[in-house]
Image 1 (cartoon, rainbow, N blue to C red):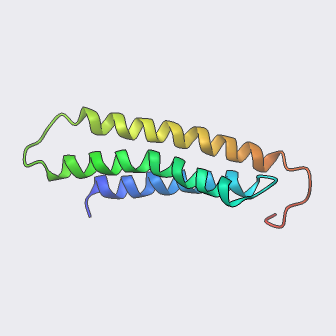
Image 2: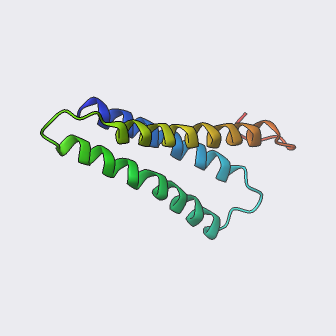
Length: 99
């Protein structure tokens, strides 16, 4: 596995952890909300994986502007999701079993 694959895996892992952190702090955890989180994750993951796969399958070295832009969009979304998850975790009114 090359460096782009490792960075893709780590980026998507952070995004999934942030989404699951938000889901764990929701008051009513229903199957519909979990499905919405999975769909949101897939809407962010599939384009990034496709772009990384396309860039790796090319035989020539390209400027890879699209690859950098795809990573920046996913990292921006991941940062926002993790920030919201941390806010949800910090504003917990009752004592949580994870502390």
